[in-house]
Image (cartoon, rainbow, N blue to C red; front, side, top):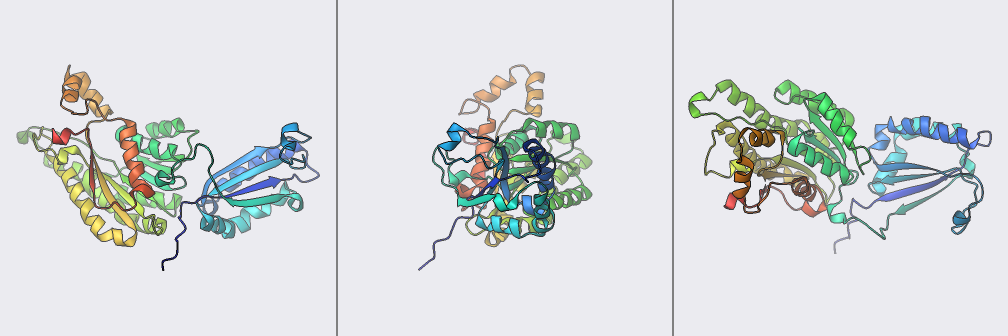
Length: 389
């Protein structure tokens, strides 16, 4: 008889009714809680890596007719709601050294601990609940090349779905602008400047990620470059640079982040590596002069299968997505340079359109969530049947 396994994605929530220290005014309490204690919590990664969200509510003192319907007494000054990935994460957070030595000792500075109350519950969704099959809230996701094009679509989808996203890219300004645009999303997003075209750059990026996150639940290897030329004009140095970014970097980033990926794996919910390949590695009707690009992406597809055969048993699924044509800076440039190219391209796609952020983002959410937990070693075309045309 097999014991029923509790899903690792069940949320556990603590609701704390907070009373202020008697010698503080309500305003002094709120200011300290908001301006000092909340940043203190954010500075403690051992604690925050277990959190899905932490929300503070200011409860105005005095009687309230609506609050009285639910037994509100007016004796509390605030409510804190802390959502954790599961009960294990909740226990780990409150047993970590940072909580005991940093967060907990600060609480008496503004809180009357003897007159607070708390409830711990596993969430029961009533209205508007997202399907747990596609839940990625609280997961840490790394997206390389995640501030532009398809990478930005992927990073935004993960962040909007509640993941804590680390975006890697070369352009600091573009990266910070992208992060700013996601303020208010269900999840969080941070940008790390990185150049994955060199071995040193990959090592530095891996070290930066390890410093930010002890666990990586999802790694999306999206960063890459495109080049095309007549066979007579192909450049060996350019070939090597493209292969370095498109093929070498994904492999060695996986290698470097194995400890974080293994740490994130749970029974029934493995860690995920998602490689971004290309329809150009499947579609052999024409080279379009993209010899290095097509070869690199075909190698990425095969590397995906090989990594899956070695890593799946250890709790790390590896899959690839082969996108077709999506809006990007590159395709926009092509359309501007060649009148009628957009219409010609769309005319060759049976779906009759380019891909959208929902198309690529939804595919990544599927592969990153419980819905895709049994999928590993697959190369999934997302291209509106262009490959079949």
